[in-house]
Image (cartoon, rainbow, N blue to C red; front, side):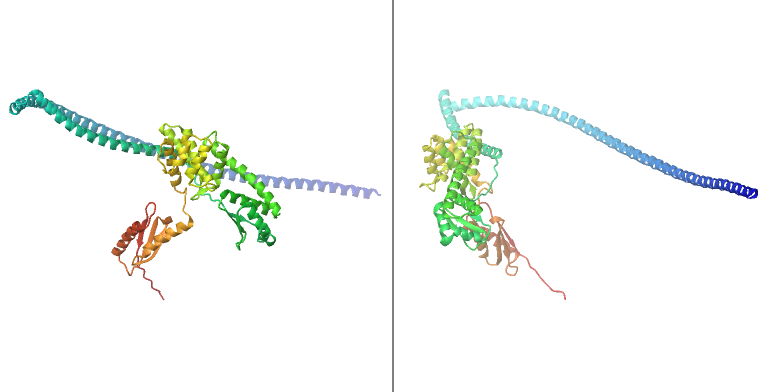
Length: 519
């Protein structure tokens, strides 16, 4: 390479390096300028934000000051109102005190005046007493002179007359005292009964022994009947019930007079349907098993009832009969729950009267025991129950309570009265017992028939379970006056023709309706 070329290369390299240095410095200058511009913009933005926040803070401080000032003014106003009210109350109290002082002054003047009048009256009475004494002495002497009677004879006649008058007044006082004593006894008896019922309030459940069994499908009816009816004949023979199978879907009816037997049959049929194997041998096996379970369940129910009432030492046979009462109903009221309630009410009444509560509960629990055996013996349940209780070693109070709780005999024991009272309270409570459907429907129809028999009545409806009779009167055949007369006549007719508990409200409605069409 020639020297000129090398010099040229060096010069070019130097120039390139110089340009590179200049370019780097230029780039650094431009970066610094951009950075300074960014910094300036950031500072300006920060200053603006600071100014905005400063203004917001000033506004918040002003708002807070205004709020504090408003709250302070409200509190000040409230304090002023309270002070004003207190001032008014003090003024009112001061006026009251002034009025009281004035009234006291007036009363003092009245008392002073009454004292003066009383002193004058006492003096007048003393003076009159002295005059009367003189007049009586003069009258006595005059009577002695006119009658010619001595002092002793006149005294005897006077005493005789006083004895007659006192005897008459004494009789009147005795009658008055007897009447007052009867009223006190009635009030005390009501209070004791209310206290007993308040302390024991049992829930009423209208239980009824069901006689229907649900089946999964209609094919099961054929299996229950069996070939040529052998299954159903065997079931009826083993259980002693009637099985009714009709076109009603999903239901088989079990009918029997004995509620326990019907329950055993229902449970047996339910088990057979669940098991699916229905034939004579299986029917006998399941029935025997269910019968044993039912006997055990009956014993448990009797023991639970005795424990609930806290009656100890009952014969096992009586416990079993108590359990059977669970499956017996009277006017839809469960007889076992009814007996437990009577036991509690009789026990509470006995404690109120100072008698034995445990003995009263025992009498109440066993008073309807005859209903558990009245299907197997002749006679009413009071006599059957009394014979059973006497046979199984119960005391005379318990036997007499079972025999006389319906007032069939002369009451000789106080516990019989308590049991009869508890029996009446339990049976008469609203919702405890109810009518049969047929009797209920018949009574409703009788009410409506009586109302429909009057002229001018277009319709009649018995509502509120027979407690109200609503009558629609014809507007064309009656007036307001005749409607009122019809209402009264219907009420009197119901009193004459029907027998019903409580009151029946008769309402007669009469209205005129006019209808037009706008075309």
